[in-house]
Amino acid sequence: MAGDLAVDKHVRYFRYALNMLPSSMAQLDATRMTLGHLSLVGLAALGQLDSALTADERAGMVEWIYAQQVQPAAAGDNAAYCGFRGGSLFGPHKACTYAASNMANVAATYSALAALVLLGDDLGRVNRRAIVGALRHLQLASGTFAPHPGTTESDPRFIYCACAISTILGDWSGVDRDRATAYIASCVGIDGGLSQAPLQESHGGHLYCCVASLQLMGRLDALPDRERTLRWALMRAGKGYQGRANKPSDVCYSFWVGASVEMLGGHAMVDADALAGFTLECESPYGGVSKCPGATPDPLHSALGIVGLGFFRPELPRMSPALLLPEPLAERLPGAQ
Image 1 (cartoon, rainbow, N blue to C red):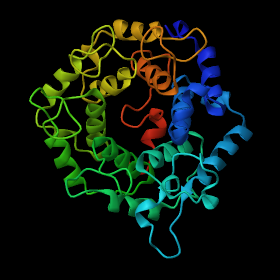
Image 2: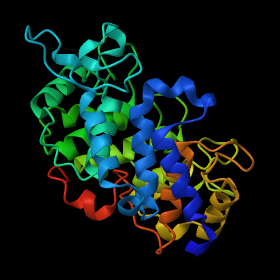
Image 3: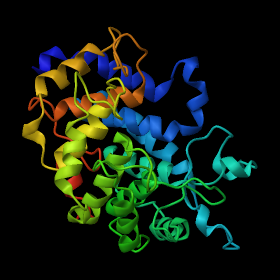
């Protein structure tokens, strides 16, 4: 029952997270855009987004997000760096002289756009052409994406961010979908799970990024063996979902794996009471949800745990498994397949 969830405490927790986090999370300040996005997702998943924030608070958040937008330089030499940066750790964007902190990345750009949509912004000030152009620069020959220039890091997390960005903006011209689909197919393991690169260990987080990317591209049928992939996901369910074989349950996988099960058509095959019960065990008495009972809550586990709970609780708003937005909002996006 929805009454089992401490809604008021969680609303208070997410409001605190949108304003100030404890000193123990200071190292996450460079990813403030993602933390803000997740806090808004948590409020939306509780059905409290409209009532929890005043008009002035919404307007202030929108302005802060736009202040992190990296625009094309007059010389045109930063095309791959455009989008949104992760936060204002080193001061206002236009006055920042620390280059590493003054570049956009696809994860922050996805979070910024999704947060603007949640806040009711019309994206009128988003430089769509610059963002789509940056995606073209960041897609690698393998089909996957780098988060920003100058890094060797690349995996399906950034394919997902690129697909989500394209869906929100309604412009897929920055993504070579054939190459992205081929890379995802190459990440399917012999067990049916998906990994960050070919021949690596299957992982619930990469399962989600791959399945959701295919869903957003309208290519879910590209999975070599959809039934085997669903079986791998279902086998991660115990008291809660685990992210890998032989690992303990972790609340965040109630979304990463749970949303994958939803997209793969396995909703009726799981023990909803057990999965929901684990999430409720992880509630903090002060608000928020932790990764496991007794741990410290954080915005990621809090938001994703509540979204995962909503897959089984009709009293809670249904969030899009592929986009972390309320389903009615996700269905209205111009790039939805």
